[in-house]
Each structure stands twice: as C-alpha cells, then as structure tokens.
Image 1 (spheres, rainbow, N blue to C red):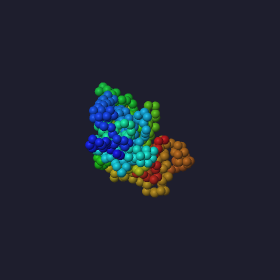
Image 2: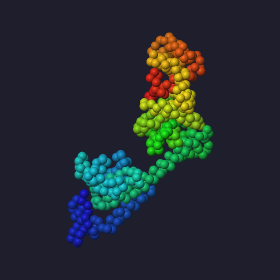
Image 3: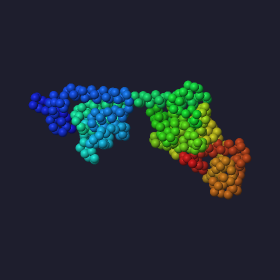
Image 4: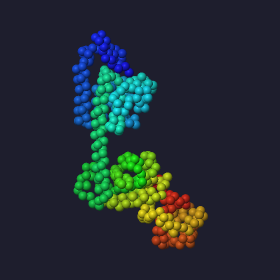
Length: 449
C-alpha cells in the first residue's frame, strides 16, 4: 500500500492512494484545521455514542459513517460480532480472519492499526485496515475496515485506533457487568441450596435477577476431585451449553470439589423425562467441552426449599460414578442408584467388593453359565418384581423366570420374590456390578427413553 508521502520542498506533492498528487495543505479539500476538526468530531461522536448507548454495534456504526466504509468487528475465532455497511459501499463483505492474518504482512496483536492486502477470491487486490481489540493478554476481537471514500489512509488508521480504545472500554465494561451478574446468580444459588425457606431479601434478589423461586429444580453435581486448577471444568461454559440444550434457566456455582448446576424443571413435563433430559444434556455438554475426566450426578426433581437434599443426592451419585468411571457414560441419576448410593459413595473399596461377594459370590463364581441368572435378576427388579413383565423383557416363558429365581435362591439363599431384605441386598449388589461394568448386567444407558 502506498502511504502518503511528506512533501519535500515547495514543488513536490504527496501522493494519494490512487496515485494522484495530494492538494496543497491550504486547499479546501484538506487543511490541518479541517483534519483536526474531523478527528475531533470522530472522537466526540465515539465518546458520546458509547456514553449514551453503550453498545459495540453503535461504535462500529459510528466508525463506518465517519469513514464512509464497510466496518466489521469479528471475534478471536473469526465470528462476526457486528458490522456496518454504508449506502453505496463498494464492498459489503470482508475476507476471513485467516486471510487477513496472512504471513505476508500480519498485524500483531496489540499493535497499532495497519494496512493488509488480500489477493484472490472475491476480494481481489483490496486493502483493509486491521487492528486488534485487546486488554492485557485477553484478545476480544479485531476491527476490519475497507479503504474507500475520501478519507486518507492515515486518517483511517488513526480512526480505527481511536475506535479500538472505545471498543476495549466497552468490552471491559460488559465483561465486568457479566462477572457481577454471574457472581450474583451464584450467590443466590448458594442461598437457595442452603435455605429451607426463602426470606424477603432472597425473594427480592431472585426477582431482580429474573430467577423463578417457585419452580422445581434439578441439581447436577460435576465432580472434579484431584484435578489441578488449570484443568478445572469451565463452569460458565458448561452451564451455557446445558441451558442452550434444555432451553431453561440454570444457576451455576463453583464449589470446593466441583461445579453445582441448579437446573429449572420445565412445568408440565414428567419427572422421569426431566431427569433423562438433564442427564443427556450434561453428557452432551461435557462431550462438547472435550472434558474426558469429569463425572456428574443428577438429583431427583426437587421442590423449592429442598435443594439441600437434592445436592446430597447429586453429590453421592457423582461419587459413585467417580469410583467406577465409564467411557460411555459421564452422568448418572440418583434415581438409577436408589438408596444403595449411600453404601457405594461412603464406604471404602474393599468393603464394597466384600459386600458384593457376600451377597452374589456364588452366582459370580459360576462364571458365564450363571449370566442368565444375573440378567434375569436385574430385569426382575427393573420390571417392578413382575414375573410376567420380566418374561416379556427376556422373551422367555414365565415359568422360565420362576425357575431362574428359584436357582438364585438355591445358590445364594436370597428369596428375592418374597423377602424385602433380600430384595434390597440383591439390588444393591447388582447396582455395584452395573457400576463396575459387569458384562452380564446392562449399564446405565445414556439415551433418553
């Protein structure tokens, strides 16, 4: 790009971008006074617009009007945040960020606005002014403007640099507001979990933040014990992903051992469906974040004032899954575990293994020959201890189910058809086998049914 040249002597003239001589300094087209007036008008307009409206798009629109050029504000990943195209503009689009940052003449992050030339494609041989909006080591985005109209290149670069100052201030202001709002919502969520009754102050805070205290909620606890702070779960992003997936309000809290998500349960939807959707959304959110280590527990649907119990349910469920991690499942609901989660979550590993051996050891010792008995036992409990439903699930005759349950009684002494204590013991042992991933019993399905 040919820059404007300083005039040397009385007979030489600077060149414009189009190669034509610049007019004398005292010409009506541009004088030092008119240049200063234009810059003052730009600076005043940018400041006034930011004070009155306070939006990024307003600043971009102002810059476009003053430069009579197309202006884009793009994010660090190349996404368009805002754009402004004046009437009659020769270009309404810009190249991709990768092409603008070509190695031939890249503009460094934090450097003053510079001119880049992009060859090829639809924007053949066009020049653009590019500058980054950065605060410390945080890159907010890039300002890109075409070079057209009557404004000299040096003025365009100066104008972009001044716009960057105002855009940075607006970005920082919005980030600060977002942090305050996030902290306020997190503090509200903590009080909701701790409280059994909601006082007037809590209700006023919830109303101000737009949180429905009367809604039923589900607590999801994402466990991250033993991880360094650098690898911690991004609580804000995870909450946003799940909220987007479920289209409900979510309050996010970072605790000492993990992340707590307070998920609003939509009205008119069955509890089982809500739990299934929450579990699927948490699994999907962790997958989208690329987090391979965190596990989550999901509480039951809980009424207002009972979130402390829901927190314990979710925490215990997460600890159960943490003990027996699975490649295919990252979240588990407390309803899938039942009261047996207390044993698995709070006992040492040896005690848990000994419990399984004491209850089902004789069945397990039989190897694959007893797999049908274990599977029948599992389906018997899944069907609500109905022999008929178990037979349908296994596609066998009802008498076959009765015979297999009799074999279980002969081998283990457990009367699962009639004795409630034996039923609880067998269900708890089967639960542990499922968590361990035993091949004879089905795992915890990720799919919502």
